[in-house]
Image (tube, rainbow over all chains, first blue to last red; front, side, top):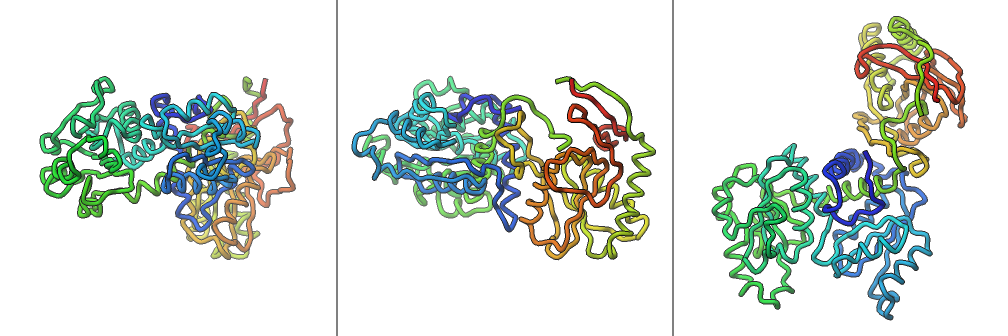
Length: 315
Length: 181
């Protein structure tokens, strides 16, 4: 089994088997973090370009660390001070990166589909680190890895994603991935934040968590993007917090082992209360650790050879 | 590529006898087993090392610590090999610094696996010595690496392949010579 594409653009385009392969491969990478030397020579000589058109600390650092732990060379392109501000197009930037002989380009862009455009333009492996409102595949993978690690399975679990589903790339990647691995996916949020016909993505829509909280195994709480408030998706942050913010009161009927995820950064007191964020059910900091392992697995698998499988004998 | 059966190099009894002899050689050639640790290389080296630890315990009444090493991430050929290696478990539950490490593998060929294993072990600490024990040395080295303990030296051509079958995963103990066609 191997990844069929040269790129990782979204979980929509991966098979169940490919997703399982990534999650399986991430396990030994996580073991690596317990060693004194947390680095392996696997991608020595490879170059990873981090091309972030949007601000990001967590994802960029996670990818950079993943690449460095695999001994790849990393180059950060600071878009704010690059040729992009002089008017260079995405395709021209991609071609420049290709001329620099990069092996991987990790791209974050505010435009949905940006990763696809660059993937079609150049031969390097492209990893989508978030494209507009479309997908954030490695976040989806690390969420699934964390669920798998804590629950031992994904199939049959009731997983709810709470918040701004319409604008969230994390939500889309989670929905694609979790459905492929057999979870029952629920989306919860105000009507203004739930995409039209989202049911076609095989999810159940709810606007009141209290009605289904008792049967949920996992809740993935999305960050409320305060900047979107200007679009009048909800009247006030206080009202959102009261109706959809997760606090101990809302979880009073929840299962004892309910798993709480959040992609970060958190708005404490808005979508999640501090008592829940810091509770024993919360795996938010472990998600960060798992993110590095999953991203190492993705880089490793995309760097692999063509065809064949199985163990290496007589070497 | 097709693998065609040629002949059995060792049957189950010979595998057992060879392993026992290897254990005795290890005891004779090491200055006591107190400072010894074994590290089995994935996959069959792990099962062989478990058997060696058990045999050694029968003789000395002592248990030598055992670790597991997967060298996949230390290979020097990830983008040139025609397969995508599956990363397996590495587990070294002891400090290797100052220890006499014996690496155990089933077949020694080019020496690249052993080179990778040495690199990986050194990332865990600084052993006093590292020695190598293999069940079969098939010749054809590409690196200056030689085993310290050999079950059987059986030089073969590049077109041939040695398959070590072990009860634990292959339901039988034997070593078979095959030819690539």
